[in-house]
Length: 149
Image (tube, rainbow, N blue to C red; front, side, top):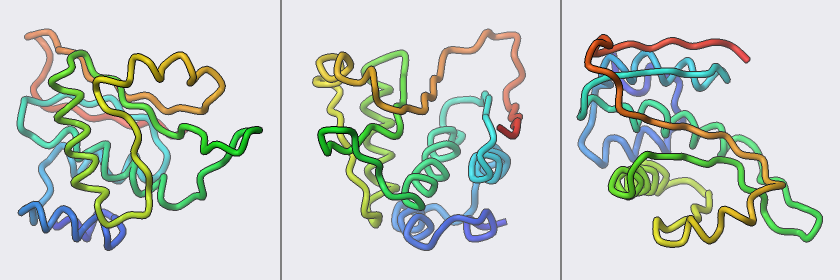
């Protein structure tokens, strides 16, 4: 299987190939189609298995597919919010999202140092949240499930 088989748009496939990847990992092969269809995702896998790309690539595609709504003041509303348990992981996820979205006409806001100050202004914004927490040692190493919303 290749990334082109997962239903990703050409700019995302190009960014993935630019980054040196040709074949999706098992977690990506399961997660990307589920998120593209609007399903919820709960996934767990070891470090380095591609979890970030598994949710970021379809999230970017879904954001690209619809125009950004504006609030009453004409500001672009927040459409996605990614929560992480550490600053280090937030920086890694931000870098990945920038890498994967480099060929898209999307704006990415949020510097790890400024997120705390911007959080108070996000009450009225629509947001999708993704959270990756450390999993207990007893959990299986690769799981993915999707539920249609």
